[in-house]
Image 1 (cartoon, helix red, strand yellow):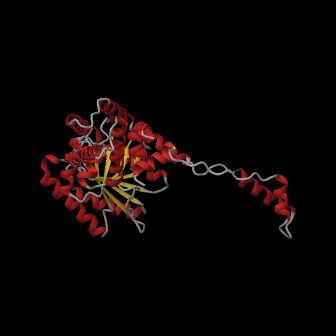
Image 2 (tube, helix red, strand yellow; image 1 turned 180 degrees about the horizontal axis):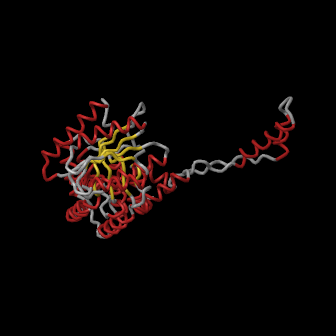
Image 3 (cartoon, helix red, strand yellow; image 1 turned 180 degrees about the vertical axis):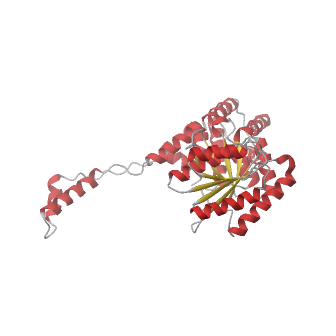
Length: 381
């Protein structure tokens, strides 16, 4: 079953089969069943009757747990701007669907490119629709909509893992290195992650490794005070690698579970940035051989194609293990996830769906695709 069919079945209730009704069991028969059990006390009989009664009246337990349903709703809410924009534009385009007209396919490509789906993903979607039209599987607007949406949703499943994997060190300190340009929400993301770990009862230390940008150290200290995490720093212009070393020592001595390291993001001087990051990583791996356990690239989703260009540059300079997409609630271009997956092969591991401390979510491919295509998926049911 492809991701599209899986989502349609799970979230829209499509293809659900009615469960066969169980024959009604009378109360006397329940008591009789208990009575057949030899040598039981009166209390045990009562417990047995209660157990049988609960089993016969049990509600459907296949429904999503409350927290899972709540997170699905947060994806829907956070991706509303992208969903509404794409759905409206696609419906307007499909109103003029002509399966033999190349101009329609060119307009579709333009729409996808403008939605930051990326060139490779755009060509795959358009070529799939062309092929389906030629073999006569697509002859109507609804057919075209089904092929486009199903292809896009399944591509999300192919380019991102169907589960969130975050590499934590089970035997000691987990070290996470954050990279990204100024203004993408890197420091705020670190604070949100720290808050969530602290809420789970873990001890967090943050290292202010961005010694280049004015105010970066003070900003991290403010966040540390708010969330209750210790911050290790030096003066502006100091050696970031020394801060990293001090951060590791502080985390070890205090029995911390996780160390979150901020870094500078001056892409205007890529060589200095690369040398700085390499030095920091050498210090980390010398102290903890398998660290950093994650190197997360923070990207501002509202910048679209520019975010993809940043990702390509950072991937050249450091070993990025995952992407954090911030400000997804503020963009109408949710297709950036497809472009990242198709052109970079780096998984999106976290997504920011709002401004509160709890709005940083582990990336869930199914919930993301549903939040982005909810109405379109339901229309194809």
